[in-house]
Structures are given as C-alpha cells and as structure tokens.
Length: 577
View 1 (cartoon, rainbow, N blue to C red):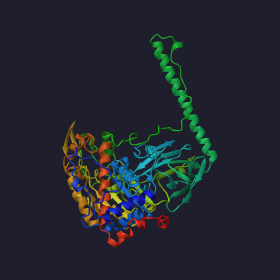
View 2: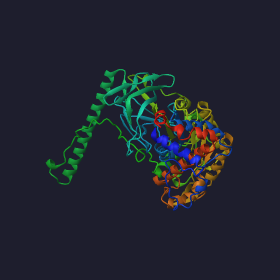
View 3: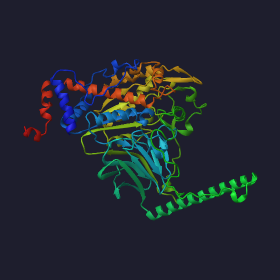
View 4: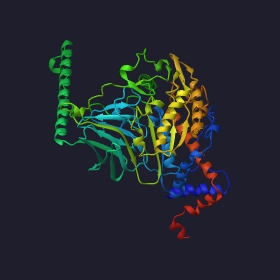
C-alpha cells in the first residue's frame, strides 16, 4: 500500500509541477550500442484514437490512485509467448514497479506433462504417464480451452507440481485461489490440492468443467494429486505398475549382465570377473517418462531453432476443422529448417476423425481418466494479473471455436481488460501471404474475446523481422513482415485498437541480421536470445506505461487535484496532521 501511495504521489507531484513526468519504477535501457533500434516510435500508436482504452485506463486509475480493484491483461501469441520471456519481463515490471501490486499469476499449465517447454517464469514437474493434445496438431482429439493445450492421464500415480517462484530470487507469488479446468470421463477422478500436510478438495463447477480451490494460506507451489473414487482399485493398479517397472528393470539388468558376460568371455576375461547386474535401489520411480521443466528443457526449447522449425512444419494450422478422410493428399511437408515455405496460409489442415474415439471409461476394465486444460490462480488483493498464452507454431486459426471450443467459457473467469495480440509470425512464414484472410481470421478471434468483455482494450504487436533459409548457411530477407505490419495497422483502425510496431522499432526489413550481430537474436534469424527478448519486454513496458501516463497527463485539472498526494493519504495519515 505504501509503495503504491508513494508512486501515485510522484505522479501527482510531477503533474502539478508541470515538468517532465518520470516513469514510476523507471529504469535505464542502454541503447547507445543499438543504433539500429528506432526508439522514436517506441509508443503505443492509436490510428483511430484511444477512446476504446478508457475502461482500461479507468481501472488502472482506480488501482493506482485508490489501491482498489484488479486489472487483468492477456498476451496471446506463439513460441515467443509460450517461452514467456518477453511477456514475463513485462509482467515483472508491472507487478514489481508500476503499480507494484499483484492480484495473482493468472493461467498456468503443467507443460512438462505435455513434454514441451514450460514458460521460463515458473517450473513444472509431473509424475505418471500423460497424453498430450494441442491446437497446432492436425487431428483434434480433445476439446481445448484458452491455453490451446490439454494433458490427460489414467495413471493412478499421476501428480503435477508447479513452482511459481522457482526462478525468482525474491518470492513474488502468494496465491490463495485456484480454478482447475478439467474433467473426468466418468466422474470417477477428482483433483486434490496438497498444501503442507493438508488435502484440499475442490468444489466442482459442472457448468465450466472446473474445480474451485481455496488455500488456507498464500502458496507459490501448486501440487495436485488425482484421486480415484475407487481408492482400492487405484492402489491395486499403482502396485501393479510399480511391480511391472521393477520386473522390467530386473529383466533389463539381467540381459545387460548376460551381454557383458558374453563379451567378457569373448575377450578372454574370466567369467567370475564379468560385470554383475546391479538393480537400482529405487527402480519404482514414479515417472515413466523423465520429468522436464523450464524453457531450457522439453520437446521444443524456444531457443532450439531447429526443433521449433521442425515442429512448426509438422503442426501447421488451418482455418477450420474437416474430416480427416476428406483432406486432399498433399506432397512432402515443407521443411522450414531448409528454407522451404508453405504455398499459402489458406489451406484447411486441422481435421477430426469420423468415428469419435471411445472414451477410456467405456472400455472393458478401463482405468479412470482425467483431462486437464488449465489452472487459473489468483488472490483477493488489488493489483495486476498478467497471463501469457502461447503454443509453439500457433497461428490465428488455432484459437478458433472448432479447435478451442472452451475458450470463452474459461476466459469468462479471467475477463481481460487489455488483450495484447502477438500472433502472426507463423501465419506470415509462407510463400504467398494472404493478408485479407489474415485480417478475417483476426476478426473471428477478436469476436470471441469481445463476447467475454466487449470493453476490452486491444493492442496489436506487429511481427518481428525474420529471414528464411534457402541453402545451408544462406538466408534471405523475408518481406512478409512488412505486409503483416500493414495488416496489423488496418486491424487497429477497424477495431479502434493500439499498435506496438515491433517490426518498425527493430529497424524494419533486414534488421534481424543486425540483432543477431549484436548477440540479441538466434542464428535462425527468427527467434531471439534471452537478451533480445528481455530488451523487447523492456521496450514494450515503457511504451505501455507511456500511453497510460499520457492519459493521466490529460486528465482534467479537478480530477488531478482530487487524485493528488492529499487524496492518496489514508484516514489515519490525514488525522495525524
């Protein structure tokens, strides 16, 4: 509270003094060695004015000046956002510096259970065997929600853990409220939140397919176990799996021992001196697949450009869902790693099977199964909640109703005041970029968001500059970045939104090579290094706060006086004078 009062007082004092208004929590970005970056356009541009931002700015005013209310921000994109480096940087600035208050971490997900990279801002771990579905895959097998990803399990040992402060030198999170979006095929599995030695059972909300939990104390580690209603069967199956793992380990050890013995005899080594089988003391490990966490591990690390290129080639998205048998046969999949480009971004490439998969619950001797699509965390405190949503390789169409039918239902419990759209790099990585269709796709996605909050402010983040590979170690400039930039500005005009021109700020066409030379970008000339992502996060934060401070500067004089230092004092502080 004192921090917010101090910051707001600084704003008011600078306004009354009619001098330059320094940013609260301001920090220095040394751009002297990056002359190619155009900081003169590092602003939120409003082609049709910023009237649509009034509800968002008003909620910020209430939070900043009165320490009341919660402001919710949603940032949606692809691999840049799944990694949560640029968005994580923005989030940290907002809740540490301005307004310096957190209302919760927002949506999180156990990406490790899906065997893909966890956002860099927290760690995820899992136990048991899990299946994964996500919105960039060709065949849609699970109803997906806001996050565009789901994991499911029938393993009786299943468990997930999310450590929100794993990489923070100072604790940042203290969550007390949790809504776990997920369902059991036959209603025979329930999630349980573990807090210390307590088992917290959630309240089932059938309308939203979610379980609501309340922690007895603020926590930054979310540990969820999955309990079968038939506890005896769960214990029996868990023992069977554990015994099987032990037996498999013994058999493998025996086979290795026999192989080593045969090799030793072949080389003339006495049989007694051949290596003996050693059975590990802890062969019944809970993980059938090694757990992975953070952006530096998993199926595709955002910094592993080759892996990302392969995934984007294999998981191209589309603008609808068709029957798999109706899809026309195609030639070889474009190899983005070698510089081949999609012909166009207009093809239907998502499909659903004609015969729906039989739920495990309907099969003979089936195990209970649970599917998880996201976890929303929060508190009752006033502040900002900043959620990133991103899947490696995602395009705009990957968030359509056919692919993510639960998006609105889940978003209704978050209801963003500001939505930052950063989807487009994968849409534009094609040979013939269909700008008209790109804008139409965004119109459809925006309509979904507006159903939840018609007053949500929108900022479009233009694509970064990128190159394409044509031969080994040979890259050429990719002009679609500029075409997409114009599309974003056209969308901003239509929807009365703001634009953060990342493409122009970077330096325009060909600038990615300069970012790479400055050790800010990867050699693939598409993705950034940590320093590059952090720099972009810093720049966006300054642009966003600049737009809000301009709003404050334009407030009527009477409003500014009412929100001055005196109005920010508590009743006790005023009474003591």
